[in-house]
Amino acid sequence: MEAAEGAGGPGGPGGPGVPFGCASFNQDSTSLAVGTKGGFKLFSLTSVEQLDCIHESETPDVYIVERLFSSSLVVVVSANTPQRMNIFHFKKGTEICNYSYPNKILAVRLNRQRLVVCLEESIYIHNIKDMKLLKTLLNTPPNPSGLCALSISHSSSYLAYPGSAAVGEIIVFDANSLSSVMVVPAHDTPIAALCFNAATTKLASASERGTVIRVFSIPEGQRLYEFRRGMKRYVSISSLSFSPDAQYLCASSNTETVHIFKLEQQSPSAAEESATWSSYVGKMFSAASSYLPAPVSGMMSQDRAFATVHLLTSGQRNVCTLTTIRKQPRLLVATADGQMFIYSIDPQEGGECVLLHKHRLFGADDSSEGADGERSEVTETPSYAATVASPASAPNTDLLTGYSEDGGVRSGEVIPEHELAAGPVCLDDENEFPPINWCQDGSGRARGRSS
Image (cartoon, rainbow, N blue to C red; front, side):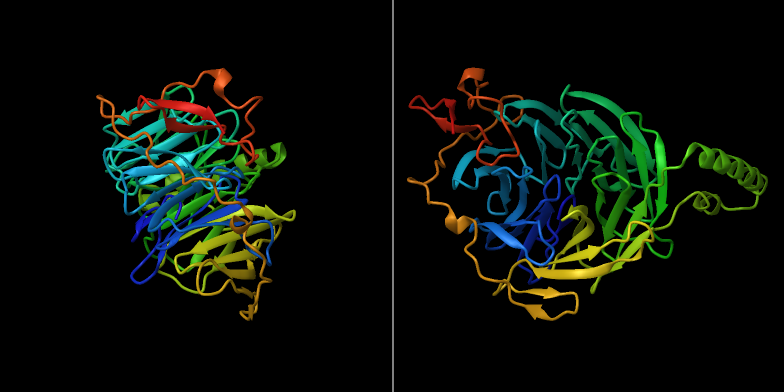
C-alpha cells in the first residue's frame, strides 16, 4: 500500500497466505495499481459499478508499482530484485530503463518533474524526463518503512520525509531547486503517515501513536488543523489522503474504521466570533491549567471526524483516497485481502458513509459485488493489455545499471533537447509519454532515443 509497509514489501499490505504485495492510487486517483505474487494490474477508476483492468503483467512478486497520472509510464520493483527499479511503457510493452541502488528500494514517488526513490537511509531524486540523477540525500534518518510524500502540482515538487527516528519531525525539501525548505516539529513520536494536497498548500501527518492528525501550511509550516482520530487505543495509520479540493482529509488504519475530517473554512464574521469564544474558553482553561492534565486541555482544540466508514474486517493494511467519480464525491478503500470498496459521502451532513460497491482485485474470476453483498458478473471484455500488439522484439534488458563513485546511482547522459520527442511533452497523454528510452550503443555508453 502507498506509504505503508507489510509482509511482501514496504508499500504492501500482504499477510500470511495472501498473494497481495501492494496497492497504490495514482496521483489524481483516476487509476489503481495492484501488485501480487503473480504480477501487477492497472485499473481505471471511472465507474462505481465496473472496475476496468487496463493492463496486466506477469512480473512476479511485485511489491511496488506506481503509475504516473494517466500516462503509460509505470515503475515496478520486484522482491526478486529489490535493489532494482524497472520503468516500463506498458502500452508498448517495453522497458524504458532500469536502475540499481545500494540497498533495498522501500518506496518510489513520482510527479511530472521528479522521480524519487527512497531507501532506508538515503533518497535519490531523478529528473523524470531523462532519468538523470539530480541529487542524492545520504545519511537520512533511519526510515525502515520508506515513508515519504511528493507533491503533485505543476508548479512545485516538494518532498517530505521523517527528520528523526525518535520524534515526529518532518523535513520538507524542494526537489526542483534541490534545497531544504524547513523542518516541521509535527508530533512527539515518530511519523507514520504523510501526504500533500493537490495544490501543495497543505501537508498532513500522523505519528506512530495514530491518535492525532495534524495539517500544516506549505511552505510556511504553520499548524492549521488538528484532528483526533480516537482516544481508546494507539493504531497504525496506513494512509492519509486529501480530497481534490482539500476540503476533506481521510485516514485509514489497521482498525475497522476509516475517518474523514472536514477542513472548515470560516467567514470573517464567524472567525471573529470564534476568536472571541476561543479567547474566553482559553482564559478559562488557562486558569485551570494547574490541575488539568496537558493532554486533556490539548484535546479541547481538536476536531472529531466529520464522516466515517466501518470496514468489514480489521487488523489488515489498506489504502484510501478521496476522489470524484462522475462528478460525485467518493471514498475508495483498497484492502489487503484484495478488495476495493467504494462509498458515497454526504458533503453536507457527513455521518456514516454508504457502501455503493465492492470489487475483487484479483482471484479466479473478475466478479464484483453490489452494496447488498450479492455477487454480480462483470461483462467480459478484452483487457486493454490484450488489445495492444506485442512488441516486434523482446524488451532490451541489457540496460544501464550500477553505481557512481560517490555511492549514488549511475545515470545516463543528459539528453540534448533536439533528441527529445518533438513538441512539448504531455505527461497525461500515454501516446506521448515517456518521450525517451534508454539503450546502449555499441560502445556500451548509455544514449537516448525518441520513442
